Image 1 (cartoon, helix red, strand yellow):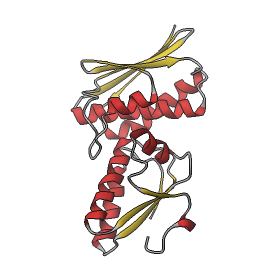
Image 2 (cartoon, chains in turn cyan, brown):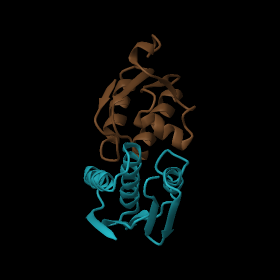
Image 3 (tube, chains in turn brown, purple):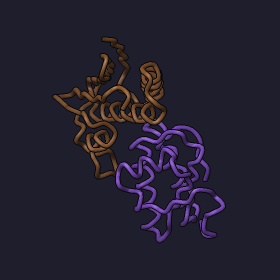
Image 4 (cartoon, one colour):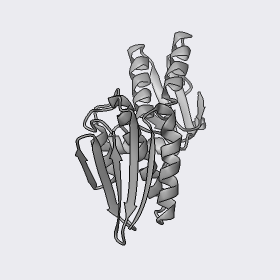
Length: 116
Length: 98
């Protein structure tokens, strides 16, 4: 199993950092461009949720085995709270990107099969 | 109005401020060209929705200029809002009022 971790302040300006991390990790495990774009959007939404919740930090842990990749995000706040001006929650939005999403407390886990 | 760069929680407020400046100056129909925007998140989309509501309250309209397959079109589809805002692919397709 391979594991990579990024921890950043839960701050608006960190969007570029988390997207760069997601892009590098996604490319590194062979995701296609569309899937990498999904992953970049997902980590940005996780960061935005952390900012909205007033979290101090966001930690992203990305792990893969031979069949799946999994992203665990800590400090994300409540994904069921819709972003400003939208009725759809971030959990709903993320569910539209990835089938497997679970939130426990202020941590969330999402993932998919490699190659999907 | 042409927007370039990533539209996220760090930059969405700039777009809202720009639209408000235009509407405060008398504009009622505003087109936002997002063809140079490679990334949009829910903060950016929320800002677009807020601008849409604001202009409609003034009797105006918001039109998005974005190509098929663009980041904003994907997000609009993902959130079910693709029918809520008028979209054209290029500035050449804009109505004369925008």
